Image (cartoon, rainbow, N blue to C red; front, top):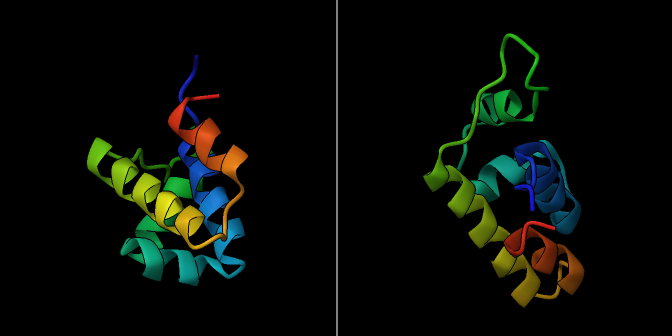
Length: 83
């Protein structure tokens, strides 16, 4: 199985929050400028890959949102099982 892209993970958080990218930055505690570089295509000069600690923090936010009922079970299942 392939690992879910960082762009997809961040989009999942945005969708779950029902907010803006600034909301995602605040909730994940990632600087807005850094968050933008994570969202860029890998072919982009400004792209920045997430380290494993940042990725885990984003996954934890998704899990918290699921507990609050903001994320469908399928999204969290797919994230944690790389589907």
